[in-house]
Image 1 (cartoon, rainbow, N blue to C red):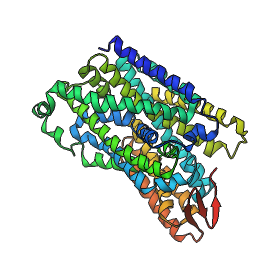
Image 2 (cartoon, rainbow, N blue to C red):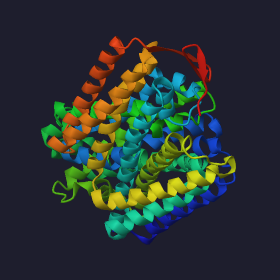
Image 3 (spheres, rainbow, N blue to C red):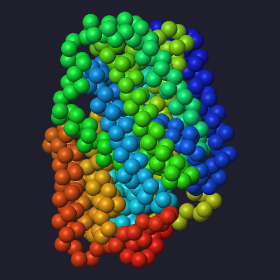
Image 4 (cartoon, rainbow, N blue to C red):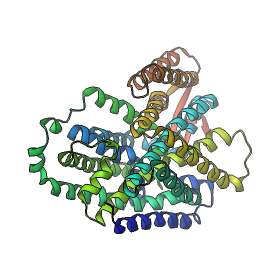
Length: 475
């Protein structure tokens, strides 16, 4: 059972988040302050923010659940998070961060034109919105298990807390709270929870004596599932708006790259922690009725009063930090890619508009979470659209020196139709949407890019992009 001390720890954590929101609101004076923290974060702060936005309900609750079901092969979920961020640092970070844009769709617009930017924005919104929904579901799971509230009430309370500090301080609030989240996650999930879990089962020797042999097979989840995580997560993280928006907060390209590399190592260590928690829980309770509650059940099972509250706060910290990215990313795309060039917004009203949009996105996320109530479903939908549609045209723009605007536009449209069609045909848990989405996107792009005689010459320079000899300023 959760003790009074545990409740107090959670309340202190929530009050601290709201307090940070009020403090950060004083720093959010311009649009760039609100959306990308003034592009000024130093290495330690940036590293914590990048790790926190990536680690969320999927890595924490989903990783623990997968390890509970399949043993150490559960590492593939969190491991793909880490590998994706590692590749992001080496392959794209320097070019993209130097572009000084606010959304990945600004880059798509520069490369392929305004119509492609619009299509990319709509696809990105689906991804970001489902990421936010995923985290709201995760918050509901933790609070439901801890406080005994209904899942619906738990999701609503979590959503209200997020929207208050996010509306007040924007990315500065996210940056400051991510330092708190990072610290709590480290103490709770990487250090305390695995130690108490292993102690309860007699250490690694106790695990070997208790668990079936399959739990020590790293490929036990099956090669199709492993391929699914590779296709869903790696392309998605390489072009995800929430991740890029954090990359844009670094004070320079060196901080962005090095901080992302450090974050990838931290994420892998975190994934190991969730695997240990999951397999230890199976060793003592192999018949858990609702495996979605694996992490919260493990905290209640293994940890004493006080420590239990800290571990549950760590899970909430991981989830809320990623929810921030999904909600703020969604509002940024709506403002920057859909409204700004179509509706004249006075400069002194830009922050207000972004705050209102963030509030509306959070409200809709809670409503959708109440309907879906599944972390893995939201994860599949989010990354299927992002990886299946946006990955090919955006990455090819960095690889090829000459690209066709039509190739990018029709690649986006064709892949969107393909992903949607296979969701309808095979269901939202199938791998076919992402597989055929990427395949169709690449085929359409290559064919049109090869035959289209009107290609754009792309050159990257410090803080700008040169297209056909003309500098394209973001905005």
